Length: 425
Ligand SMILES: Cc1cc2nc3c(=O)[nH]c(=O)nc-3n(C[C@H](O)[C@H](O)[C@H](O)COP(=O)(O)OP(=O)(O)OC[C@H]3O[C@@H](n4cnc5c(N)ncnc54)[C@H](O)[C@@H]3O)c2cc1C
Figure (cartoon, rainbow, N blue to C red):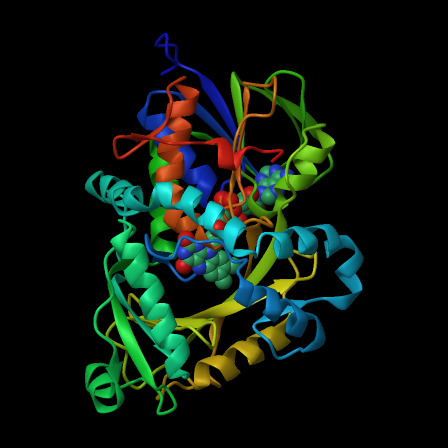
């Protein structure tokens, strides 16, 4: 309800993770919800991702480290990070913003801003689970590994520091050689060492998204699939077009723009100034394995993750900038396989199924856009969750619920400072 108890009609653009979590929270608060989705619910990056819900890892991509990777991303086709040289002119401004955000000071600023959500990630998910949303198919604890011992020790130190600042749970002791292989026999021989992040969780996003979608339909959401939002008109009006080219307008009391990597063109056409969101595509597939790892295994240096999800093993990785969020490039899967081969043994790498590409909604500074454009309180933007939309989805839904109700959002009792997430920062 709004602050005066009024039931509002909220039109949500995008039926991905953020749109679904927003719809869930708003329906629970008694509002009326319409979702405008150009394809089907969960069509974007919602289902093929790594399923990680990770209070310790919700940090920006840009760092002194990744700035170096940008160069190899342009020059080499075998790097986890790839940047299409032909798209460099379109990506120049984003790239510059990314490099500027890579300094220690700016990264620390973004990290602090994102850390505000950290303590709420798992409780918000648990509230959904208690309410019957399916959060199954995964488990808890990540085995963090690295081929390079020094890099692993540095990562271990970073996670200890984060935990000492109240951000997630401290990592376990470093395991090496036989101890590591006794703990996780599927780890490949080249892996020097590893440690556990014991409290991080993961789930199967396929069943999670399906369960959320079922719930919002049961709760009476009006789901308009196959309908693209083109732009917003004055007030809370969404101009749309269907697959046959028919145009229509949907009116509500509020509009939430949650179109992930496709958000910027909608805002631009609507005359709304906002930091640009570009797509950073990732890939995943499923492989048969002789023996399932006991839990999620994350390679720090190979930039890939293998995740036991229900009864299958999903392999996830890559970050591709080519300005084509829907384009699937099979060659990227081969690069991913080369990385994953050095991570675990016993997988049938020729038996790939469920091959998938998804577009992460990336901002140069790694922070989402969360709030209203100046002078347009009827519009809310919730997009640009980078690599963390699943982790941040449930809590973002709750924050949007508060904003629609006219309340200042709180995170586990503390007031959320929304200024770092301003649209035109
Ligand atoms: C390989 C990979 C692994 C990842 N792993 C993780 C992970 O382990 N943990 C984590 O937290 N996050 C992870 N992510 C990131 C996460 O998937 C995204 O941050 C999240 O999906 C963003 O949610 P969203 O709702 O903003 O966008 P999406 O989920 O992409 O949804 C956007 C929706 O908007 C729709 N849409 C687009 N344009 C329009 C339009 N004009 N009109 C109507 N509808 C429109 C799309 O069809 C889509 O359904 C991963 C992403 C990738 C690619």
